[in-house]
Image 1 (cartoon, rainbow, N blue to C red):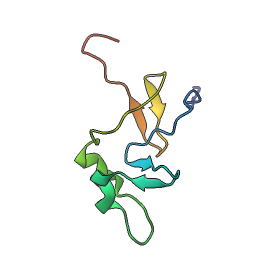
Image 2: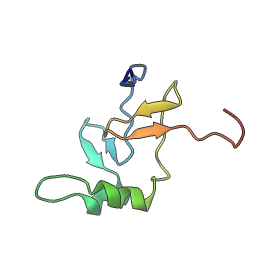
Image 3: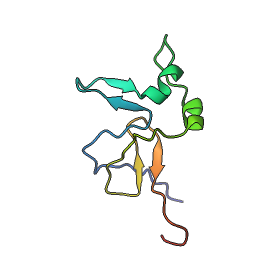
Length: 84
């Protein structure tokens, strides 16, 4: 059996679900998830963030339907039922 590691290499953008890059290039949590970041270590409580849902301001720029986000999450494009 062969195993494959799918790695996106086509995006010039840093796409984040729970974070964003400010004008200075610093990565900050989105307002929706700011209270879920540990003040000691800076780790985001990802299960709690997923439970809150994806922030309405998130936009993803990609050429493919399957990509890994900059924060390590895998995103798959939503398709209409019956349409590949």
